[in-house]
Amino acid sequence: MNERESLKINAQGHLEIGGADCVELAKEFGTPLYVFDEAYIRKMMRVYRETIENHYDGNGMVLYASKAFSCKAIYRIADEEKIGIDVVSGGELYTALQADFPAKNIYMHGNNKLDYEIGEALDAGIGCIVADAYSEIDKIDAEAKKRGIQQKILLRINPGVEAHTHAFVQTATTDSKFGFSIQDGTAEQVTAYALTKKHIVLDGYHCHIGSQIFEKQSFVVAVEKCMQFALEMKNRLNFTLKTLNLGGGYGIWYTDEDRKLSPEGYAEYLEALIATVKRCATESGMPLPFLLIEPGRSIVGEAGITLYTVGAIKDIPGVKKYVAVDGGMFDNPRYALYQSKYTPVLANRATENNTEIVSIAGKCCESGDLIAVNVALPKANSGDILAILSTGAYNYSMAMNYNRNKIPPCVLVKDGKAEYIVRPQTYEDLTRNDVIPNRLQKKP
Ligand SMILES: *Cc1c(COP(=O)(O)O)cnc(C)c1O
Image (tube, rainbow, N blue to C red; front, side, top):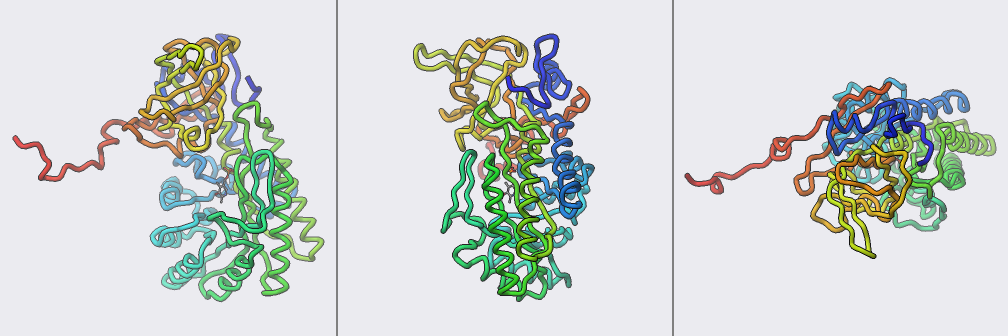
């Protein structure tokens, strides 16, 4: 098993997360169960914040991209760690406000923000909206006018850098639904347009080049393109860049095919970005912009694991062996969506050597309901506790009730003690909004 910050194997040979024995957690809270290590989350938030403090005179802010994992408790942690957040829907905004998150440190994203979401954002007084369509600019301007305010916005631009885990490409044209392209001139046109709006303050630009990226150079190239574009806008439109938001996307360890970075390793990504911003500003004579980054996955991903109980085991001799668990695509749809890879560990027998290649299947009525395919494991038995590692990001936040399975609860571990941060769903929750019209009521 990969040596990680949060995980270790204890004297009983059980997997531990944040000092809590996973077998005990499974007993106390049942399975499936999402478990988060608070110390890891805080450490990642702190590493990013301190990098901006130490290398950029604190002239910036970390925004936790809360789509990775959204619930009230995570917003409290972000606030305590003195970082901001971004939200991508009215629901995330509502959750953050319910957790008393300061509105001024909230940024709102989305390629198609709904009218009511823009209204809710302005009513809350959020710090900034990242606009990604002409219609949105019109709407924000109109809603701000109604309220007699000026709303700060950034424009989402597309620098034409598309990054993947181990490589990146620079494209002249782009078919992304996100952002205004620098290359084809639309980013300039929308800048000019936004500057005409009386109730909008255009503060700068945002770019986000992808997710699960390890290629440092792709981030560097994106910064260079954004800074070059900002210089052109200064010269052509007399617009001075005040804020530059560089998005998130730093990769995490899922399997040994991925790099394993220490929290300090992530600081190096940010240091490279900061050095590039400084160099470009010096070369162009522009003032240093206020710097924002939006890591999501790298803050919560490796902080979380999912615990399951092994149920049915199906051996198709010479073909495949399935180990089925009490969860599946309803708590982790990422294999079904992207063929994502994960590492399993038998939490109750964590010291045993892997002896078989198996596939971990869920319990949904769907052949594609898999968690991990062709992974190494000791011989698993019914009743074993299986941990899937690095599930803290984009698992709970993507969970669903397919087959009317209950979305598992989330617990947060601190100093070996676990508490609910999301309670278990009940069957009552699943049927809460169901209605039987009168004409369909069972006749007596
Ligand atoms: C998804 C997203 C992020 C976070 O990406 P991670 O890969 O989780 O770090 C940040 N900014 C924007 C605009 C996003 O869409």
